[in-house]
Length: 467
Image 1 (tube, rainbow, N blue to C red):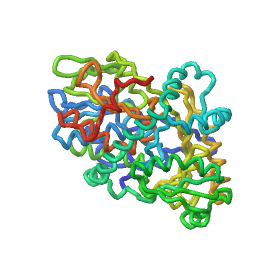
Image 2: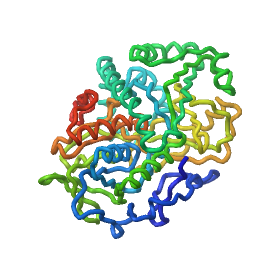
Image 3: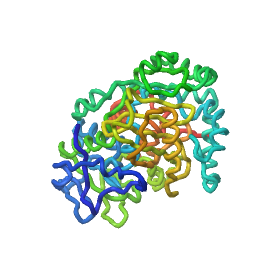
Image 4: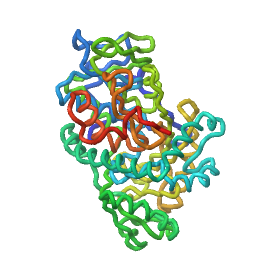
């Protein structure tokens, strides 16, 4: 597996981490040699390297897993590509996620089941779903759209669209990993969703029936079968469902950094800059940067995650993107003998085995981009994980918080901007950015090169109605 990359100290990305009683996540990074010090990536405006006098075919805004997957796919079609990012590669949710290719997770978050659980969850300020009172008024329009998206007909339509994107992403995944030299990082361990009562299990059955209707394979297990697959679970769990089609990556941060290296090794350009606006011009798009030069490209892909709607607004487009803040704690690798990812659905978190440790994380905090992290949420999940996995060693962990970019109907925005076909949006994947990155890359590059898309893009249109 590739070693971890690091920027020079003056431009190393910052992350919201807590260090009291824990280890910094930076301790997981190891120096890697070539790309970052060969002039192909720049750390400040004054250090930019221009490969050619003319402008690139494509500028991708965002160096997360979506943006880099698009950039590599565009290179494969013969396009000259530059990637811009405010912090550098793998600096956001692409680094701190659960590392899952959750192809079986086709049901939208906006669903009647969530509506039934939400009142109870919202009563617990450290529970699976929370909205800080000070943010409630600001989030209200998004929540109204979310509620409307929970109507059965809209859930069925979203599920069908999600299934199509999942199927495409699954088909594209292994060829993409082979092409980028990252296939050895893929794991096919499956996922185990566990239940504390017959009532909780029964409540899950309509969701499994919907998955079955879309061809998802799974197996319901009793307590003995569950324990054979994953020893060490507390006896409170009496049933489980195993989904073999749930894959994972060895470590999402190292995977994203490996994509960055592959992109640069193939002649790509990457610059650290904060883009402030997009402006359509003749034969292309101008990209304005805060305090820096104006760049130009024939086409632009906006894949800036939770910050994307701010740039879409500079094109006169209002897209209801919100931020689901997620938390996790990554423990040392010997913290527990974890055989596969475990989903504690009733509590809104998962436990995942990575090459760098055991990650306990999840939850949804609808609190925007500016509020400081509330790491008591990570503490609460870790405390539950200790109760659910009695042998779990909780010492030596590293805490993290990141921003998931989410739209009210749980589908991403993939398609051209209203103002110009030369800007293509690729953001809003919520919990599924890593999962849907191969399929999204294929769709975006088909749009860039004028090929017919592999699936119907109407459900993902940035201009779709959200109410």
